[in-house]
Length: 161
Image 1 (cartoon, one colour):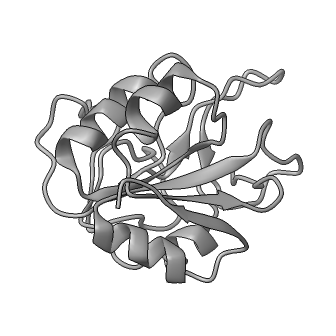
Image 2 (spheres, rainbow, N blue to C red):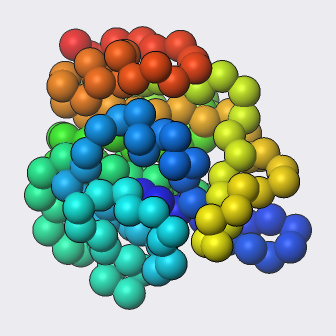
């Protein structure tokens, strides 16, 4: 997904994935939770909040930067069900979501070094970094291989391979 939804003091809840991440991971067929305003494409096809990507059919290789917070698990559950894609989430390894949707179901995880600086919908980089470390989660062995070889700064681990 192109957008993360994490409420901040200023009340803003829409943050775009850094373009270097999308560029490093190759082509995606669908971003089911894309921003309404996209200064760059994240996939060939996009569902926005108006489409409700959770109830739409998912086809092909998925990019998913889900709304962060209580809804994250619903998006990860659909990623597990679909089985082909990469999700960007906070690296909170102790959470129910990690134990439900990552540890038993994903094929690889890339723990990104440092904290990401997300972007505004006008394409400018945010001054503050994310509120927690981030990771990329691969569903499907081909996506795990792509993560392992993507060149992003971090530590990759195969799981459930």
